[in-house]
Amino acid sequence: MTLAQRFRAPQQEFEDEVFEGLDLRDDVLVDQVFEGCVFEDCDFSLVALSRSRFVDCRFVSCNLSNVQLSGAALVGVSFESCKLVGVDFSAVTPMTFDVSFLDSDLSWCVFTDRPWRKAQIRRSRLRECEFEACDLGEADLSGSSFPGTRFTKCTLRRADFRFAMDYAFDPRDNHIKGARFSVPEVVGLLAAFGIEIQ
Image (tube, rainbow, N blue to C red; front, side, top):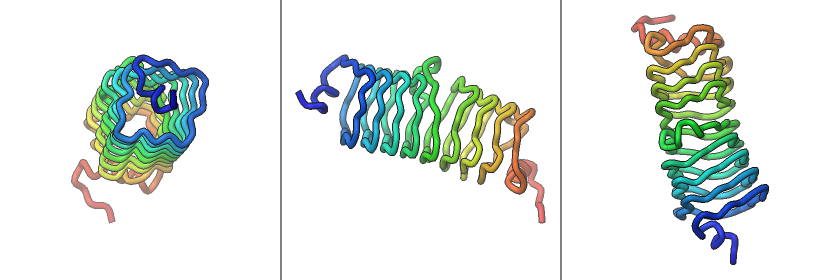
């Protein structure tokens, strides 16, 4: 049985395996379990991973754009130098959402009602993303860029926005006490007040 066939077989479990160069575009991998696995240079774009479970897994230089995560579990999963464009992370089961991102592209992603304290989203690009009713208390968002991204009714207490760029959200609509920002980027928070800075 080839590796691709193993992936497609129902209810497979993979533990402590390293996968390199897999091309699974447009595939369906439902009800799979991956524990302690590493994925390098793999293409999961448009793959349906419904109800699959990833525990303590690492993705490096992978393409997961438009991956479908309905009912999936992501626990202790890290993404490094990955492309995750257009992913609806609100489809992941809320209590099994524990992920980190480094040097990744998360443009056009959706994060709704995520209990995600101490989130790690560092040096990543988040163009026109949606964060709604997320708990990002003590999150490390340093060095990331957020052009066109909306934060609505989020908890951002003690979040680290230092060296982050292109963010502009209404501080009256989010809890930002103790959050850390850098100059001059912090002036983006004043846009909500309709004032002009010269």
